[in-house]
Length: 478
Ligand code: ADP
Ligand code: ZN
Ligand code: MG
Image (cartoon, rainbow, N blue to C red; front, side, top):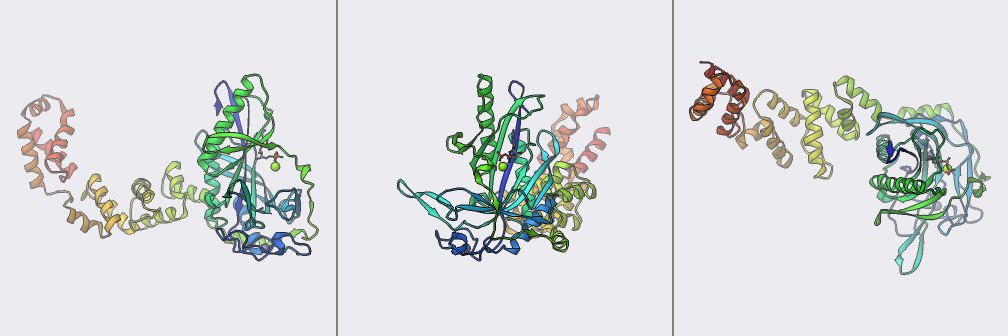
């Protein structure tokens, strides 16, 4: 994608994801969100002298599964390193992370770009680290409070190449990444609880240029919509700067969702500023082939695989398959509808439009049981219900339950396929529209849908439209 004036946008994302564990990365403290400040702490995560870290096995399992799900090369040996910096929410004075020897590298995630279709983002690295605490600015007037509950919470950091060409693409990648991590049970990816956080790097260059421009890094973005917005705002700022003859300074910016603006946080530190060195308290992390194989066996069918399977097995287009496989529960639901006998394409339309539409306004609940939806689809296909009537039945079943067939009867929307009854409606319509009948008979056959429409109107939508058309054609040919 090029911005105005032949600029190309280049984006790379660093995503921090909290692993779904009960306890922290190197101690037994609870990793749960929402405890009163500074209650989930111990000598290890507070960094008191003499306390020793012990890696959390469940966290390592989840990190390995994430690396496998993202097609990374897992390294048999990786090294925990200390990332040193001073900040009030970091009592140890360093964060345990991985630097020169990360857990995994060279992965890929394919996602559906709104600009380029199916596209692959490269995962440069995936490493394990612990979180820092949190500064709270809203507890005491003009003072900052510190909550250390997050210190030591297990994270993985997932870094992409500079692969995205628009803010919209970056957002789609993130949605896809979240899907994969949720499918595999690696994280709840809840941005509101801080269990998924994104740092977005962006630069611009003249279209066709090979070298990358100077990037800035935007932090403090707490929704995918804001990632897209923040990147657009920053991209536009850089383009304006360069077009005005200026240069982009490499720096870290904070996004303010209230003003939709970015402001400098600090000049960008370099990695050597952190004085990384291997943590002397932790031996290298060694993964056996057996351990990796066990984690591989724990992975479910992932969204991309499922999407491909849906396309071939159910003859669906990529867009429909993408929506249906975005959420594991929705994919399972769709398959249940098909297994209950519904036509695959009709089922896809119903799930995407009606079921997901209904779910949006009802706490993401799939309220109509799959068997009931299959029956409803069958009623439309067999001519018992019009599409319109079926939507009413669907709403009723969603709200109050019941068998679609019975509900349709109770609502009085079952289509009339009795030819005697329909013939009477047809006669009445033809009698009331003599002029159109004359025009039709003199060759204006495009009036047929008009007559069908009149019959539908007269019958209150209950006439079987196919039968009505057949009888109309017969009578008009007479
Ligand atoms: P840093 O050392 O500043 O953290 P990295 O090389 O580690 O930079 O890259 C961090 C993220 O920024 C990665 O996702 C990478 O793809 C992205 N990135 C690097 N250079 C650029 C650039 N010129 N424009 C946009 N994104 C970039
Ligand atoms: Zn602790
Ligand atoms: Mg970096």
